Image 1 (tube, one colour):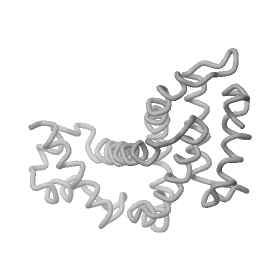
Image 2 (image 1 turned 180 degrees about the vertical axis):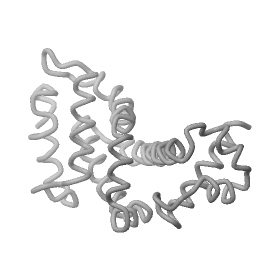
Image 3 (image 1 turned 60 degrees about the horizontal axis):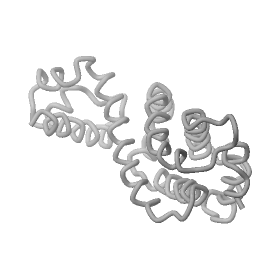
Length: 192
């Protein structure tokens, strides 16, 4: 029951952010949207609006990773997994209505929330990558944790700013993964 109520509040916060933006969303708005009292919101989010917004970003990121896991489930090998992940993430970010609205209307607010939550996002990606890295043949001296941290930061960096690479082009994504992501991480025979 407690988990369900927390989820209901997070859904309410997400709806309010979609409607009003982060800066204008209030605890009162979220309580009204979730049909709970302000006191209930503060019981689950004692840090107030800051915690509520931060946790809503993390909650939405977790939902994203659930979708990412489904989208990459059929990957043949680790390099293919990363390729599918980048293709999916780039497309998903471009199609995410709330995120795109925030980028247009409140880029500084969104950036600060993502920066504050950046370590959480890195941890989510590392957890997702860990079993795949554990099964890969890593280069001597490379650890699962170190490789996970590096790859998580690379993924976030390229999803946010693709640079010279066209993340809609599967062949460019494959080249990016093999030359920029996996070189020095995974033994060469696994990255044709």
